Image 1 (tube, rainbow, N blue to C red):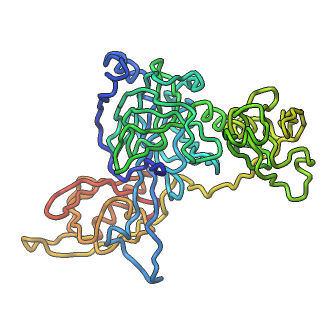
Image 2 (cartoon, rainbow, N blue to C red):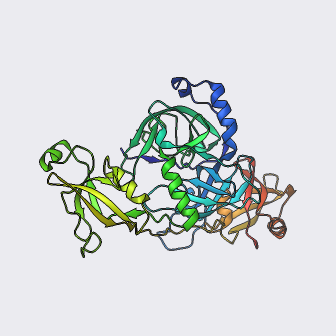
Image 3 (cartoon, one colour):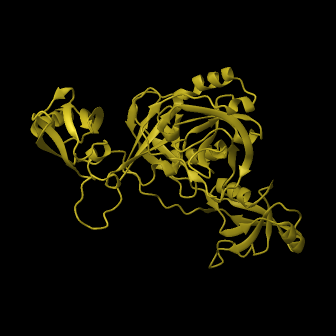
Length: 447
């Protein structure tokens, strides 16, 4: 079964839960509490605004139906640098019109996407908080062993700051997500909304980023997968320094060396990467030094365990550098030198961290139950900021910024007054199905 990405569509609600799997890991609740108190200030919530589905009919629409309204995808993240760089999953923020980060103290910031590599599920965000932010410390994921205790923090189903604990169930897992898979597997409860959240060791260091679950339904069954911190550090360091990953590659396709193929090709053992195709049409990139059927057993003196290990080692090598490959060809070991090429990157479209620049809200006069004048929502343009607020057609607006309104013009003047103060939100008391609820309405500079 393919992995289910974890971004949830929900409203952030504060809750803190210690996972029952902690006892299985042999870790006391006091130890978990100490780690959580230390690291939780650097864990953030991610909100990605996504547009409604395109109108198939080509005509004008309003945001009356649920399918016509934009959605707010909820995920998790963590601050990796005090200046405001933040780690999360690519699938949390891609295809969004705006991204916001909510820090542990409840502050909300517009975020800019610095980079989203095409081959890995990572995204680097940046916020300008105007202050030094608490940041995590990376641990060494290569030193994690099966049975080590770990702690996950995130926003499953929108329940912000949820803490669960468990153990590392496996390392170097290949779940067919990318050419570089070496996931940490954990039984710590991870659900939709945990995407992008940190996985900590008991020293309070991030050893992974929770990214994928395997589950027959919609919830956790103890099969969660985290991108290891060694990969995170490599990618984010490149993105911060160069604005792109600049990952190395060799233009070849490889496969696992099976028992039968090892015997047939007289390869040294079951380790290495068997070349199935040289993707080098003009023959200049590899200079004919690598052929189908070769088994690459080492790169720059480092043994290769499998094709994913080869891909990672080559990706980390400097582009343009010389790589010494030890190969087995028909049972004979030899050394060849090839040039590391750059993995082709297509920069994905990224939002600028801002909402649409129009309100898109039409109000109307109506009569209430006592025949008093009231303000109702007549229509909502899906491309405007009002569509992200939760307002629906037919809702009655009772107050704006704690000021009662009875005419549409009154409400619009209060919207404009808030915008003139350079405020980004206005508090609106809305009656929906005879229940009053306060909603934050995002307003553009000129509503």
